[in-house]
Image 1: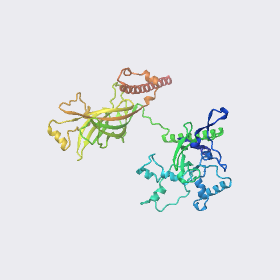
Image 2: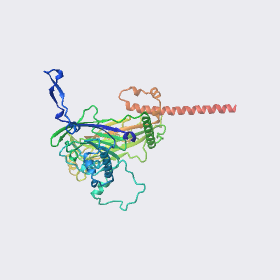
Image 3: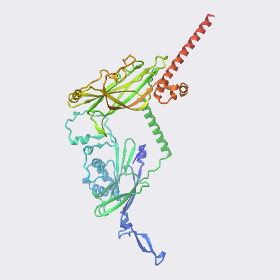
Image 4: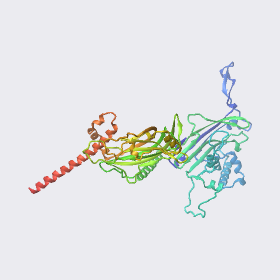
Length: 549
């Protein structure tokens, strides 16, 4: 479980209650005479072991309860025996532990017997990070990633950089050794670790490493999040440990959070700190976004499209790629000079999906365009941009074939849309053309891809495709996320409701309706500007007449 720790003060006040108990035959129930109930009755009671001649009760080794603070050091019997020998001390921390153990021996011994801790400063913390297992399998085989991550260690919370850094003579180490990699491969996320341990050995064999068992691991990172593994017991019941030493034994233990409640003054201070922190974070985000919101010029509709070429299926050959482009209408539409309105996907091999072969591209693209409504006398709906696509295949000899042409009008309503474009290709009659297409590649192609629909350059009344033989091929899927921006959208909803056209009440014309609303808003804005100009002109005429008279 991971819970947030808002301040270092609360972290220092964290207290954890641990209770360890061995379940043995001495806790079983048995019968004994109960004279109080009658001489012919037998009572049921719990057996309690009697003290030995030395006064020691065996139940003291079977049950232990203790309260531990954050990073509080409780020595194990192994550490007590080890650090009493001065020759075993190698580091300053070892000598510090030796002094603390000697003080404990002089003051009557340590308060704990089986439960002890490893803090962030102990060697066990680093060793545990190197030797941790990825799964619970007994025969786990470490993967390549596990072997590489085994050499990764985390920075300590109290590590500080040097104020003055000395320039190293060797900036780049071309042939790093394993020890060099181990010492310099560091995760930058600071982390403090604490382990609550238990010595589950027999009564007379305490102090052996092989009997040590991890009861709980607590970690706190620099973001103020404390991780408890396993979680606090609460109402779930105790955890169980089954040992396989000289004889099989069963232990149970509980872990509870017994930290004192924060005082009202501390809670107020914490709220002030959090409020200040969130305020600074909000200011930081505002500085990234900026205060100026870009708006299009009056009378302009901005269309922004985030698109994706999802897939293509149903084509004859493998290794497909898609060439696509967006055609803007010749009148009233424009795009920025740097805007690229075409693209080519990567070559993608197909995979079988039912009866069809599907090529998944997941190729993203984006573009923006502007629509400027200038002629307010016309009532015709404006032309909308068209997305054209050409599907081609590439074989082993780098020969390509046209697999199909398709086109679709971009959605006129904002939001997410999934479009499926059906394609076709021109064909020649006869077997020779198909043999040529199969062996040497190449086929009939369109010189102008806009000929898939009515070309924008066509000015006649009728477009004849008589004599063009075609064949239906596969389909291409597009996913489009369309955004529209205009000053007309800022008007109140009541004005828009009043200016609804007949198209709003007809079914199936939602796209045309949204365009019509934008045009109506443009017309209203221009009409108001014209009325304001006429009113200003009348005021000027009346003022001039008054001055003349």
